[in-house]
Length: 120
Length: 107
Image (cartoon, rainbow over all chains, first blue to last red):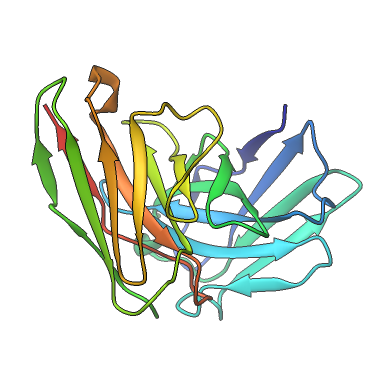
């Protein structure tokens, strides 16, 4: 059974870089059937897609965040990571890692989410 | 960017009722549409993929329909655990993948 778990600091200062890691267990992130990525949800609000990475290393990012976002993979550790630079209070959110099938529409596996607060 | 508009924003029903939630796209997404359920404090859960296919383990009372720009999620007979927030999502034209703003289903 594949599981995903986010980890990283829960508090980041304004203008600094938010860094999160998603550890995948029970399956490989080099599986060519899936995208792996990040989705966030500000408190009390809806879902916002951040970006995906494919096992080849190719990325797709939300244009609204593209200049600040990097998603990378660490295949030996079966992890992928999110970096978001120059954060502001607007980046305060629950950050989810998720798996999305290449051939169908819908992210079928999610981590439990981690709250990141941007505050001095 | 494709905008998804969900209606109504809030739907008030009782257990045993039939619920119909709507999602309208600003341009055609053919059937590249998914529905999710999110309970308080939990991650979203995939209910329907490709507009009308139930995800693994999803009860038969959940069904999805539509194509192009107009989609529906129907819950045939509401159970207490179905009261939650529901989101639609498209992946026809991306990036970005976009979500609707959500429909809150309340008792």
